[in-house]
Amino acid sequence: MILHSFRAFAFLALSIVPCGIASAAEAGEEIGVFTDALDGWTYNGGWEFKGANGRASRIPDQGHNAPGAVRLSAEFAAGSSYVALTRRVDPMPLGELKFWVKPEGITGLDIRLTDSGEQTFQYEVRLEGGDEWQEITISPLTDSPKSHWGGLNDGKWGGEARVVWIMLSRRFCKDGAAGACLIDDIRLVPGK
Ligand SMILES: [Ca+2]
Image (tube, rainbow, N blue to C red; front, side, top):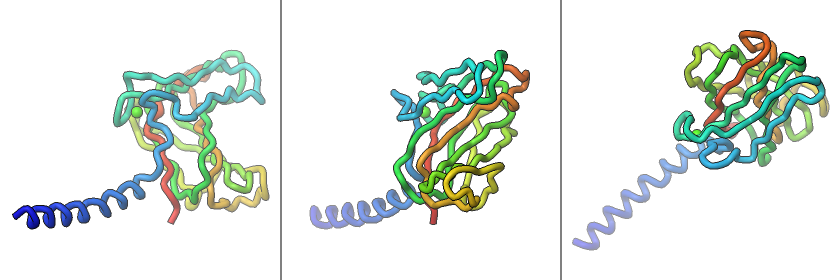
């Protein structure tokens, strides 16, 4: 009976483990859940333009799946173009960048992905889910960037991501001078 139970347990365990691995791979690598830290993300003030007054702060009691999110905010009354949240990532063949955002007075975001050849691709996304949490997906394999520069500058994605930028841009602020958003559950899904 004990042996029978063990076999049943072993069969169950073997049945579960492969599913777990498959779903983890499909979900991708989490690079921002903000449970107790900024998870390696840093603030960039868009410093090539002068005048943005912004910050990136962890908000402990708000989040998408679990408490803890980062709030990116900026005032542009004195000028400038954008502020950003940026992070270097371990090299991996990238299929998609996914994250959740809750807008506060903004209608879109700009996303930058820098590949292993130091070529940077900038994408524009519109936030059409009102002020609720909404998921953003960027695929460098299939989405057309608004612009690209650096490296070979040939517009061909180099395969591996090295740097990710999530940008709060002045042109997406409803009142033209200030905006913010909460960001959570950022992950990288491997390319196939
Ligand atoms: Ca969270």
